[in-house]
View 1 (cartoon, rainbow, N blue to C red):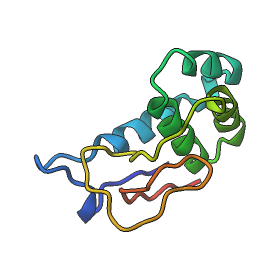
View 2 (tube, rainbow, N blue to C red; view 1 turned 90 degrees about the horizontal axis):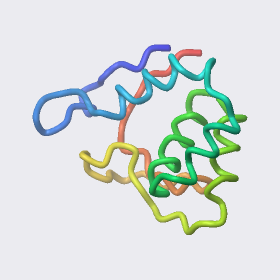
View 3 (cartoon, helix red, strand yellow; view 1 turned 90 degrees about the vertical axis):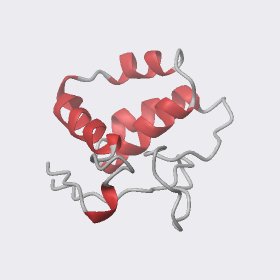
View 4 (spheres, rainbow, N blue to C red; view 1 turned 30 degrees about the vertical axis):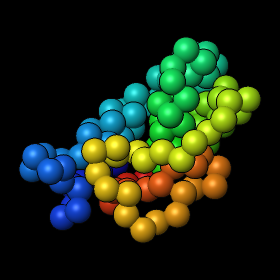
Length: 110
């Protein structure tokens, strides 16, 4: 997988967006993640965290992991969130499933 910073992926401090680092780490760990353990962990986190991770897992082509996260937080109210909270919202619409507004660009090769 390549998740490379593009012109719009730099935070105000001139560093790559943190979401790029998260995507890279998730991609390295997905083979060792256990769907049930991930879902159990989601229950003890603030809802926006598993919401963002689930969205990113979907983007990485990991539907089983993402689906377990979605089931774990389904009973809770999902509010609209940004995967890269340090960046501006932009003009894109929220993903209807995760209520995440994509506010970063990536190149994910599978």
